Amino acid sequence: MNQQGRVAPASRWIVGGAAEEAPLRLYCFPHAGGSAAEYLRWGRRMPGVRVYAIQLPGRATRFGEPAVTSMDALVGALLEEEFTGPYAFFGHSMGSLVAYELTCALRDAGRRLPERLVVSSGPAPDVPRNRTGVHRLPDDELLSAVNGRHNGIPPEVLEHPELRAMATAGLRADYTVLEEYEWRGHAPLPVPLTALAGDGETALTEGDKLTGWARHTTRGPVEVRTFSGGHFYLREQETEVVQQTLAELLGAKAGSGSR
Image 1: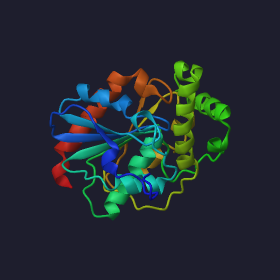
Image 2: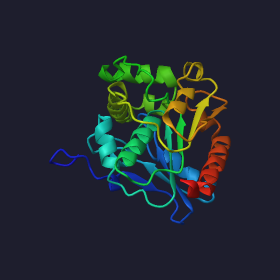
Image 3: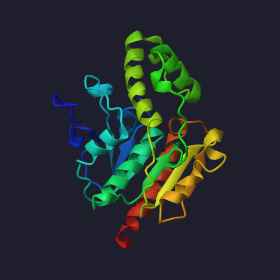
């Protein structure tokens, strides 16, 4: 935020990969505590797609900026970005919820919508949130709780005091967003939707937490795909995830004239 307490314009939030133009742009929204770097390397493996990633404040190159702790503030800042030309959204975990809410806001503002929304390892937005108060825990307990759930924090981060502090700051902000989120009954989106998850995420794949995304699109049926692995299956199966996502995106681009 700046000195007046406003969130920085979204143009500071978008990190671009390779400079070459492409027929389709993909904007990637990271998981809680995540950064843009994890997704930018996808650009080298997605011919025909130019990959961008969202870099939230309070981490990586923006560590010196105050983190944002509400969905409204995140979406309000991102809504200032001009999403021009054919584009798609990919969101992992918390990122799936941010990408969904931003798409709803773009629709409400009469703006161009993504050709496809790809949500990964995130329950449908109308599913009741798990409000366990993780964001209020002391630092060590917060890290332990998050790592116990998803096992996604690298050992070198846990072993280094400064890296632990940096990780904790981003996670606390993002879990505040997640645990205080309230779905506001948005109408289904006129956007094709793909839902991805690891086959080890049984709490997500059993029941309708993942398939429930079908309630939020008028362009169904929703494509539901699972990959070998847990919550961070996309690290373990990156090649397969990138290839299948690329096929989905190029298929969306081919059909973009129908909307």
